[in-house]
Amino acid sequence: MLRSKSLLLFSLLIMLIAVTACNNNEDTTSSEENSSDENQGEQSNEERTLTHEMGEVTIPSNPERILAPYLEDPLVALGEQPVAQWSIGDTVLDYLQPQLEGLPKIAWDLPLEQTINQDPGLILFSSPSALQNGTYEEYSDIAPTYVFSEENSSDWRKQLTQMGEILGKQKEAEQALADFDQKAKKAKASLKESIGDESVAFVWSSGEQFYVFENTRYGAEVLYNDLGVTQPEFIKNLPEAEAQWNPIALEKLGQMDADHVFLIAQDGEAGLEILKNSSVWQSTPAVENDQVYQMNEPSHWTIDGVIAHGMTIDKVTETLTQ
Image (cartoon, rainbow, N blue to C red; front, side, top):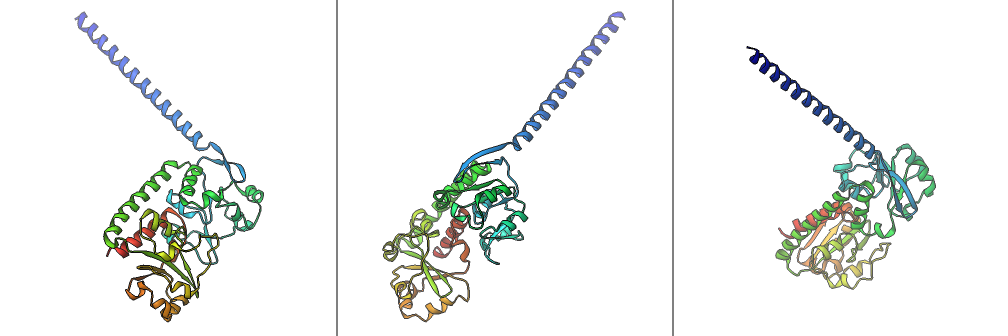
């Protein structure tokens, strides 16, 4: 009997030790989790000092209320939404409206009063020349301000990579570029099968003026380099693209020898009627072979960005592989 009581007491003691140890482990785990959460909170509030075109700027590691006029493409590609969107009057980047619709507009030159009213946490300028309506110091007094270099601004891939570094989203930027390259590779194979070595050109009609995409202008660079589409001799012989895009005379446009032409213009554009009544344009190979394709969404054709160029690839592939 005494032995039975001893065994019972021993068993209860073992159970008590086990329960106490379990509770201690839970307390330790809870303490570690709380410590980890606190560390993550501290990390999210850490500031980083970055070197940019105007010197150095200190920004939060997770900036909020970002104001980045004309940089919305890389911003949206990385899963961010600006506090306001670039505009000229009522004109905005139409192709990004699924992501930006309803956001307030801010004038393209970022007036200081409008900037203050948006209460930004971070201001991004695409280049030093984009500082049109105030000095760097004036914007810096409103919020931390980062200015892209002209080199990064002129190369959409570098611009996206740099945006990833600013926002601490380098992996997302790498993935966006990898996805784009995969899309381009697939489209290249489809286009090679559908049109072979036939040549393609982009022409933009705005008002009564016409603009031809040189081989490095906006989506044309993607068309010829990434998709491997043949350039017409007309495009090859154009002067090197300048920063200012100059219109081309209708008589010169009549020399266009492309097999396929993407004519980028909104419905009702005056230039469309001019081309319709132009004998020199009507005698070009693409028109005679009914291979001119009017594109009515001009905004993504005339900007550089991973989203814009992805849409261009989709449109070109959809049109030429039917």
